[in-house]
Image (tube, rainbow, N blue to C red; front, side, top):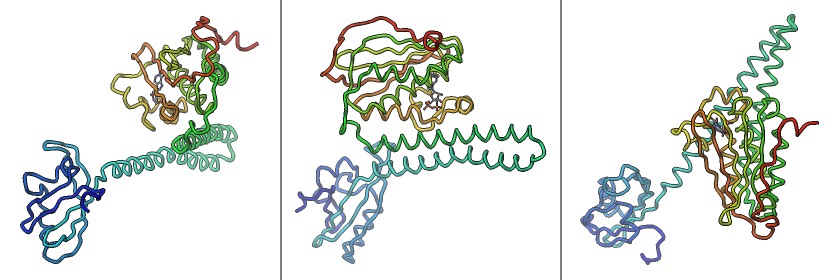
Length: 345
Ligand code: ADP
């Protein structure tokens, strides 16, 4: 019967000594020699043996002998003849997920509070300046700015939650990488042009990926928008497409401000920004790279980054190649320039 249990188990005798235990109980670190390591459990086991009542308790035990990380275990103690049966289930992952979820809600509330608070102050300012048309115009412009920030944030939050609940490989379609790149260039070139940033496309053509075109386009658009936002005027952004060992790499390389090494690990977290003030000016939501990371993961791929402060950054999306449709496989057609001048008549 014990062997059929899903939980880890320990059987204690009349003196709270361990008589038998499941192999899975060992990694939980509940047992030392023939005793339980957690004194509270020993006391509770004694009470259970005396009054025959089942008891539940959540305990935290260090992972391993010297571990600093804690395991959270749901423990149940029940009488078993003149012995006591202890059942334990690891709840660490569930608790961690709860904490992440709580953090996320707290972050979202904080992020939304800023533009909402600004809108409320600005509307007060507008109503207080009824006799000053110039001030009303100025405040109205700022209200527009704050409400577009709010709209962007809500749109990004909706995309993120869709990405987490939707599996693109279930209704996968063949996506032409050339189309995705052209679309990303199309939607960002005006902004690049205004800043005299040159957009260039290099690499192979005719490659395809299996997945959701809207998601992959959104990921590439986010990388392009960041490259523009975090680059000075008169620089160059290169989109590269390459196939290597059944993996399609789409990279976006800029000559921008770069990212300090200590921040590289964290930039894919939701709401993480290297310089919050700058991100506010550029209208960033802090969710772009998090969206990119989810899109890559949903397609069985990944996103990587190389960066050097002051020199630039390269973000690389890697997706499994779709084998069906490699038309111009291996054809390096050289750079195609999308300079501001060529793109607009
Ligand atoms: P944001 O909306 O703030 O741009 P992202 O999630 O897209 O949020 O990016 C997170 C942070 O990573 C940015 O705030 C910025 O500090 C940094 N970052 C992203 N892309 C680049 C880039 N190409 N060059 C320099 N820094 C970047």
